[in-house]
Amino acid sequence: MNSPLKKALMGTLFGTTVLLFSGTALAETAYVIDTLRVGVRPAPNNQAAPIGVVKTGMRLTVLETSNDFVRVKTDDELEGWIRKNYVVNTPPAMIKLQTLQQRHGTLESQLKTLEENNQVLQEANRVLNTRIDQLSTERSQWQLAQARATLGSSEVSWYWWLLGILILAGAGFYSGISWYRQLIMKRLGGLRV
Image (cartoon, rainbow, N blue to C red; front, side, top):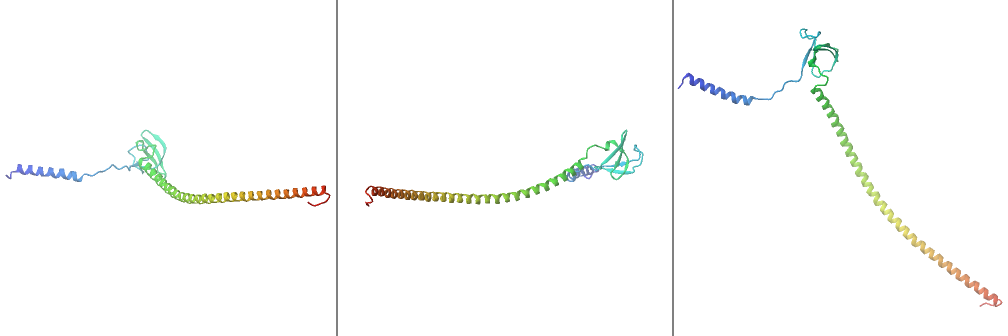
């Protein structure tokens, strides 16, 4: 039972089982790094020792092109040659992401300011609407008072017109009677009737 073949088979089976289960348990996600460091050389070839390093996202000024190399100058005055395939005309994704994150921050700030302004304007609008309602109520009351005053003054004015007409009619009647009496008195020779 303890033959070397059985032991070898059992060991292989056990080892395979452990590897299968441990391989699954140890699996994790990894990514290739996007930070690239490129050596800047004094001459347009790979044999020259680098005099400096440029990294992904650095802005370079292209001074000259020769075969597969470009002569570049960095913002901190490092000047030399690097391979063409490491240089592109558009910013890399990490620079675009940083720019977008900055833009996002700016827009978030603007949004916050606009929301605060909106709250202030809504409060001002509420206050103004309340004031408009008050003024509308006051206007309605004023119009009602004006209508009553006009109606009351028109009744009073009609009363005074009627009184004036009656006084004129009375005065006219009295004048007419007085005139008629005097006319009769003249005919009768001053005799009063």
